[in-house]
Length: 457
Ligand code: TRP
Image (tube, rainbow, N blue to C red; front, side, top):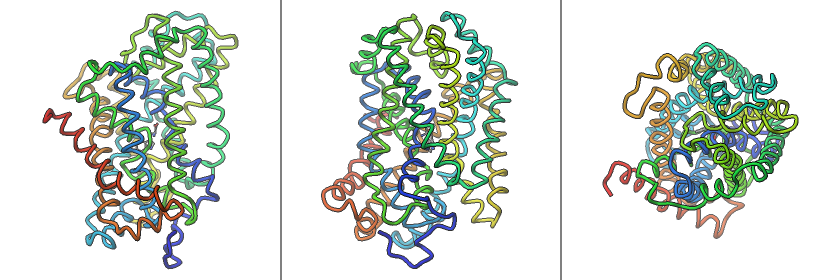
């Protein structure tokens, strides 16, 4: 528990109304397109089972201790991630230069949100496609055509990207605590309920045995060094760690909440949702002869087939994509919050002004992704299109590097008296486990995966 002067007991941005509100906010951040759109598509591209196994190990062995580190540092600093890193760096590490880690994190969130918003825009467009009955009785080919008609049209995707960014700016401008709590409390259970309904559909109408085997039978021959790096990057992405989003939320956490229990709950829930999404999608993919390695369009080309056959499918489809858009929204808010809190504190701006400035720049940058799927789709370099490159550098490099810096700071630079004070209710074995992972397991694993990906071993 922080035993600081009054000023450090609360953040200048206020505090969550309850411990539950914090859990909801962090899970709202974690659960999003990463679970339902990105996980199935990259698992498909990387051959399934072996990739999934590495991803699961990364989530629990690396992601969980980093999430705990971010929350405890956020609560101890009670500022935006840049200022928190600088302050704790001064107090514990002897130099405020640690603030750089926060700056890189702010920039990473900025880049991720630029494409995240475009994909979220596809989900919003699909609410209307679903409601209008476009999926009814459609076959695989028609569903694929529909997807390319939308993703390949820069005006339509640009329009929904704009709408989605406007909604995100709106919430961040009002302060993330008000609306967010209520939204997550209702919508998250609804999303889970609908996913379970779709799971039943997949078990009955899909090729469930094959989908299950694809996800859980590891074929290590399919896994490359860059696949392992992608699994690591996705572990960070799906848990929202490595750039300070969770640190920013931790700054608003009441002093008495248990950080360990909260983190475990969020990590388990996030993982289960991703796995269920995979179990929904791959049976549909195999039953309809689709390509599991189809790429970013995978859920948009497979789920509509299920909706097209379900009774009341148009309605179910609209509700599903609505809930997915909400899940993306609560994540997008957390991607923007660190940058906004930082700009606001640094330049003494109103929250609304900071949100509009940051959000406007992200919106502009998003057009690189909009065009990546349409007019610039033929323009590729390094990893592929602009979208592929921004995603690769942000998820697979910037998040793991940021996470590494955070966990090394918490494990090696912060005194054990500070960290044990924050993790207080979890003292004992839990604390020892966290500290061992933070000092040794997580950093060594991240470094090994990087060395492996560049071909050192
Ligand atoms: N975790 C979210 C998802 O899976 C995305 C996200 C929100 C995120 N905040 C983040 C990713 C911070 C990286 C860093 O959809």
